[in-house]
Each structure stands twice: as structure tokens, then as C-alpha cells.
Image (cartoon, rainbow, N blue to C red):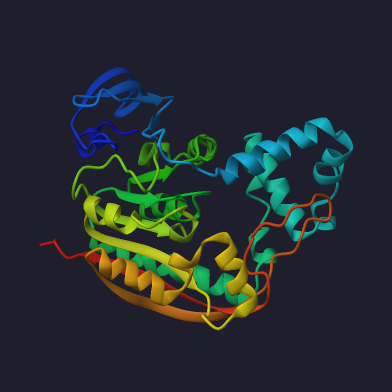
Length: 334
């Protein structure tokens, strides 16, 4: 975590100032430290370069932990399944099993091998991939308007954050509530030689550790729909972003009944429907525009041939997705 971030951070619980005790550094990056809130006494550590600002009051469903850890443990318990996944020619595996193989190689920090696997373009339709890449390019071009570090919300596997660092050579704050995925991303950025540009912070988007207006520009790559119980998320982001949020998004048709049922059952309505997403932005005080819109066919991702796993819960039936980048500007921004 870059030491310059200290001036941007506060207690995510009571929003008061933190007292910092830095134990060790590597250049400008803090490796070990402790931040204690002056008011409520909460303690937030920096461990192995990752700032941990998670609060105990919010329940979280860590899918990265569930998939990665369960898969790794399952392979250890059943060596024959490991041979079926890892000991055969890549071309004989289904697209989903190629992705699982890539994830295991990343778990083992064998990034030189994992980077040779391009499972995503086999998992999704050509429309899906083209629209997704179009949003990447649009966001990267748009970032030229801003200066300073880019905060990437709910970074996941860092598809967008990697592009920001590698192609724009911009400092990027990589965030997620999963410590497991952040540790993986940290090793990956070290492998790429981009670790000097990256800071890693664990927090929940519903209670962030940033001060009011501290973030000039934030990005997110399909991160908003994956936030559980997101009712106050836009208000919290409005508090911390003094400038602009660029959110890669895709929306389902309201009249899509098969997928609509699955969306409702999963409680994802807030940010997967355009009207609902825009309403939440506007009600939280944002000016929001839809930019770079495109539409493409989407199909359910195929199941694994080895495990009872499917990469994505949606869509459950063929549909057309409306892709875009939402540009949300804080109305208080001068």
C-alpha cells in the first residue's frame, strides 16, 4: 500500500481520523502497519502490503474464497480429478474447465502458464466479448481526463486494473473485500513487474475507508451488481468520490422473464436493470450519463465436464444485454 494513501483514509465505521504506526516499508510502499481510530478505537492493519479495512458488522458472501479454496481442497482430496484437470492437453478441456485450470495455476502462482490460457473468449459469445472489450477501451481512453491514482472498486480478477497499470502506467488502488483474491492479485502484479503502481486495500463498498471527496476518479468493471445488499452503496460512493465514477455495466431487458426470475431470486435487481440503476444514482445525488452503449447476444456459460460448477449464475437463458459505461459525476464536484 503506497504511503501516499494515508492522507486519503479514515475509519470506515465512524469516519474519524486514524493514528498510524508504520512498522516496515519497501520504498514508498507500506508493508506492515497499524492504523487505530482516534475516536472508536478500531484497529486496521496493513499486512504484507495489503491494507485491511473490513468491518465486522457486514455479512459477506466471499465467492472467491468458496470457489478457489473448495476447488483446491477438492483436487488435493481427489488426485484423479486433479489429473483430469491439470494432467491433460488444454485443448481437450471444456471452456469452463480451461478457466478452472487457469484459476488453479494462479493459485499456485504459475502465472507464466496461466496467462497462456484464454478461456474467457471461449466461455462467452463473440458479442459479449466485443461489447466488454469496447467498454475497457472506452474507460482507458476516458481516464486521460484525470490525474493521480485511479481507485478500482470490486477489482475481482483485476482485468481492468491490470490494463490501467500496464497500458496507461497509472497508479491504481486495487480493492475487494476478499483477502484471498487481493493476495492473488498482489502476486500477479509482482509477476508482471507492476507492483510499484499498485496499492491493495480490502474493504466493503458499503463502508469504505476513504475520506469525504478523497477519490478523484473511480472505476469498476461489472462490480456494482455483485455488491450484496447495495441499497446505500451509491450514497457511500457519493461521499468519497469528489469527481467521477466510470462503471462498466450491462443491463438485462425488463421483459426477459426467465432471467428476470433468476435475478429476483438472487436479489440482484438494483444494478442489472437500467431504470433501477439510474434511479439509484440520481436519488443519491449523482449526475449520470450512459456512454458507449452497445447491445449483444449472451448465452448461459457452459458447465464443467469434471465438476458441478458453472462460471456465472446469469444468464440462465439466451438474452440480449445492453452494455455501456456509466459516467457518474458528483454534483458537489466543482
